[in-house]
Image (tube, rainbow, N blue to C red; front, side, top):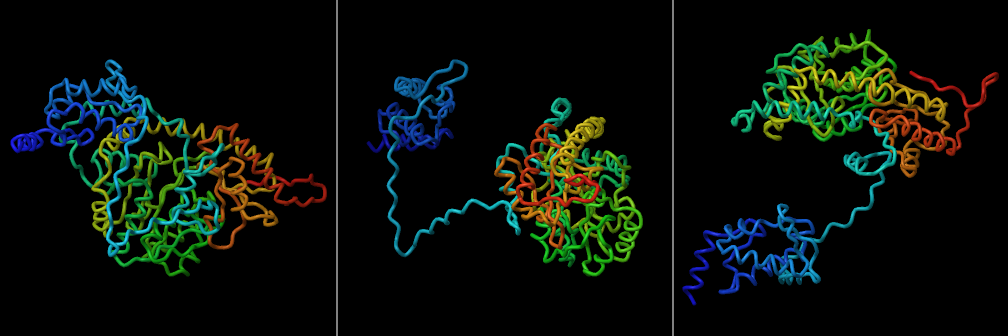
Amino acid sequence: MNRSKDAAAERSKETGADFLQLDTAEAPPGGLTDWLTGRLREAVADGRLPAGSRLPASRVLAAELGVSRGVVTDAYGRLAEAGQLAGRGRGGTVVVALAATAAPAPATPAVSAAVPLAADPPARPAPVLFRADPDPEVFDHLRGTPARIDLTPGVPDLAAFPRAAWLRAERAVLDGLAGADLGYGDVRGAPALRQAVAHWLARNRGVRADPDEVLVVAGTAQALALLGRALGRVGITEVAVEDPGSLGARQHLAHWLAATPPVPVDGEGIRVDALRATGAPAVLLTPAHQYPTGVVLGGERRRELLRWAADGGLVVEDDYDAEHRYDRAPVPALRAELPDRVCYAGSISKLLAPALRTGWLLVPAPLRAAVLDAKRFADLGNPVLPQLVLARLMESGELDRHLRLLRRSHRRRRDAMIAAIRSHLPTATVHGAAAGLHLMLTLPEELGCSDTELATAALARGVKVQPLSWHARLPYPPGLVLGYAAVPPGAITEGVAVLGELVRRAGFSPPRRSGAPAGGRRRTR
């Protein structure tokens, strides 16, 4: 008897399967088939092997367990006779039905009164999405909330993703990839992508940079997180932000910094006099297409900001929507004019897809070590294979071709939204139509409800939008931020019609002017 147990123990040291962590040492002498059948039946019953799961080939499992193949085929056969498994030829053996009765749950072990169990956290109530003071989780909840028509801003035409071009580039990359290229890479990013980004920025944004200055990051969100940590290390704990300005960007900075004072934005961009008044040593800007107003920072206001930076201020430039322009000339990046005082962040989220989580960050030399440390201890660098594919798309001209396609598609959708607003929301003022992926609407103060209430009512009707008040801490008219790039023209028209109906129901009736028809005119800025 003891020799039998010793033999089983010795066998268990050499055999065993990762599959269900099967260990033949648990089987009674002479009962291997019964034991294996029981273990498989339990796994089907408790859900470890759900319907559709594929079991290992009998030859493979027998080898792993160190038993004859007949033990495994007999066990599979018994469960097949019970209607729980089925052979699918080359498709293998799969689970087709759950057990009639689930295996009993193991008894709960006794717990000493001196070591109390931690109470389960109370169930969280369903989030109220459009609160006046949204918490950091609000965008997670918003993305997870289904809607018939999603006019959320910040998403390009994802159906236009260049799948064929991406596959061609990926095959070409894999064909030329050495085994060493699949190891841990440079934390700064793949050299090929850093060089491609440097070429792209020089060609499209007027930024001259050495590839060694480029840090590949997981989108602008990570760029802001890395900067927040790095700035804290050099004693900068306050970064001013535009108002209105991106709620998401502000939340990312606020997670790492002590303060993000708001600075008002007007028709020329950020008010530099108000920026000086805050005393903040740094500021986050979206100068090429201010979010959400769409204002371009140019002319004297731009020169005034550069003077502030030259006097010791630090600019964090989020080059938001810079490539998506329709009715205006391109605007060079601030980084092109004052590289020693500008941290520059860009990404492909609006060019290809947010899901790729790829962007780049350029910072002045004194900050590079701190930013690189923050990246190193965050994730050791972005996945290499997508970087190499993106580099090939950039250098081959495929990304430029894709951008031209997107501009045509986005322009049509923007025009459809403006026409729908003209018809269904004639009292709204449209901002930022010349570029970008969204429009900002301001609504009359006499609306009769808050913009968060309007967004809530719209979602109840299957239309998802963002209230403008989310992005403003200083006094500002009520309004909405509407994305158009990812929505077909027909759905855009239908969604805006719903918004127009809700505004009319809110009780606002536009004033009649002498000699003018009722309803007023759509205004565009």
